[in-house]
Length: 455
Image (cartoon, rainbow, N blue to C red; front, side):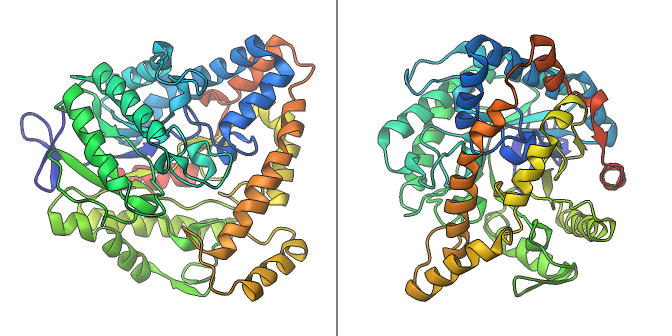
């Protein structure tokens, strides 16, 4: 198993290991831009169950989990030269909100399978709890149907999260191909006063169940603020996320200006230096848990996005930093590969509508139907000039509430209705559209990563 030794990770015989790989987003924690649904996962599943019924909905979702990652996917990643996959999971696979503290062991079934497939090919897994009870941040990727991170407001949610991690740590204790545990993805504690003590409690609980695996701890405010850590925990990596502004869907040219900010390689280096300062000052390993641009379909713009990625990887190489690129597989925005076949035929027009409406926070240009939202933004700026809501201010908050919650939730019935009238074979074909043999490979991205990983 791996262990932290100074500023590096090492195997039991002292061999240094730099973890480099991808995040398996959209699998055991489904996200709207990854699999094409609107809003948050729990709301989407409820809408689909309303059309298909419990058993047939389970048929589809279980087959999707099976097809989304198989031995072929593990072989592809190993062939690129990767040695790690960060695996986001949702607490709902183990615990139902109407039966808190009652854990279902079936939640381990698919996770065990994929960790085994990766380990057989020499790839470590980092288990990332991406959605915690009550939601640990304000956005869809914590399966949050609102803009309130209630985990930090209610001790009951924190108790459930600790209880789940005790079970996860006990289950994977001693597993040689689990690199470690990433217990809270991108916490968003508005006060900044709860997350630190919660980490103290969580670390003690996990260490009691499993004293050996590495802990990968995200800073507050979406893995960017490390001032919340009051002590240095043993055998711990402090995880930063490092998205480049120019790589967002609303990003401008690179090099060039995005929303009034200049972005070039120098700016990327400055951002990395700022985000990694805590790690460098404490002499702990550098690991970028998430980063990566999104792609537009425009060859010229996408060439600039590849340049952003290439520059970031060069910066990480220069500092000996490990990384986990976001994300492996989706419906075409960001993945190394993307689904095709029956799913795209069935849902392609709906996905286009989501894009036109800017319904997905990750993928919105923030300019969709500007003639409608523009007056609202100006109203907020005029009437509430000092309003700076957490985490990124008034413009983003207004878009989150209108585009990515209201509009997204209004789209749920339309998405679910596209399942109506389908037979079991049709549902299986939809799920199998995410199998690697039916996916389209983003060859320039694969080539870029393979070239970097050979160094």
